[in-house]
Length: 260
Image (cartoon, rainbow, N blue to C red; front, side, top):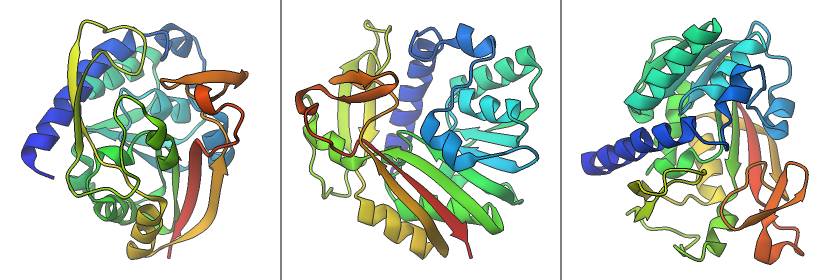
């Protein structure tokens, strides 16, 4: 990825952080009062994390990382946004939660130590041009027998994005778009440009094999736990594409992969 794309996306997430911290979408007051930000999909995959060392890649401003800390995990969160890491560290200190936060481009990450698990969720791979490199970073930070736990939006749902239609089989160049605001409430007067790469499921699975990890679980879900644009709430906490609500389409997927 060219440095210009890195810089564009870093600025994107620096701007988004200020919007997100104040948004109802992320509900910081509720989180600080004790609510977990983790959704049912990842909670089921993670299981009992007490005492486990977990590396959280692309942690944004740390809600999921700190939710894991509340559950007893020994956690390290990584993100390339200076604003996000600053908020994450401030929140950890305010709440008295033990968590380390590292400012780094994930593709350049090398902490020199291994973890029981590497975790990432929802909207992470699209910011990465080469998912093989991302998987190699994950594998490098796993102890032998350690597990990658990835929950991600299904690439199929982006095909129905009316404002920015994409191809399923993508090119090497990212989709570059400029919009007002973010995917949350608030920030409607803030212009944000982002660069996004679409990855097929075969891209992801091939990258896992190339990193010498073995898939032990793959699941697809017929709803999203987050209300993205164009979605309606089918049942409490279950969001589906409004114009496809009568169809059971995959909205998210989960992978657990073990380092050989």
